Image (cartoon, rainbow, N blue to C red; front, side, top):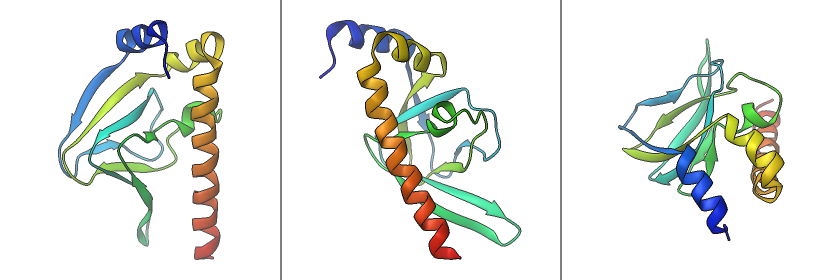
Length: 130
């Protein structure tokens, strides 16, 4: 559970964002400047190549997206993310990670576990294609 202090901090630095169906949240290779939590509907993540789109998976309500680049010392997005339906998100600017690292490491640890799980899933997906 989040303490009132954490809730206050997060509400002061985040904003809501609406993506319409098929709208791109970000493109693979773009500079990462925020991460997001899905609050309604679904997004899909994919890589593109000359062969077409390779869908990595879907991001559902309550799941983070865009956090990998901010947590892994890679400042570039590793996939393109697009709304499957009209989707709402909470936007967390990149500086929030540094604040969480110093003031609320337990929240950061939970996000890092989510990232590790997703990295394993993406790696398995890539290996299965080989």
